[in-house]
Length: 138
Image (cartoon, rainbow, N blue to C red; front, side, top):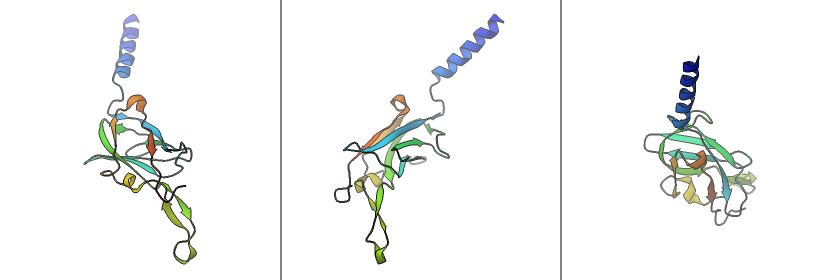
């Protein structure tokens, strides 16, 4: 009985030391420089051979995954970009509303965003603070 208990304790300790295994859970919050948070959009983590994303929730939070929300991301360094952060405004073609970005255009592309994340990140968190679009904010 004592040997089984010791084996069980060692097994649990081994899992704890292993960290996040093959995939790490990664979450965070997307805010603007003025402290307000994004309410929609997508945060995308990408390499040449892999992509994971997390949908921004109404409170600005997101949880990233590769196939489904919250299934984690493999260890590595990723370029990060964001899409779909904007607002609906009137004045489009024939009086229809149109989507206007509220963040600087540079964030919409991995090669221009200037954002990178190494996974596992400290505390498995990666918060983003974005510059507003120069003419469309708020």
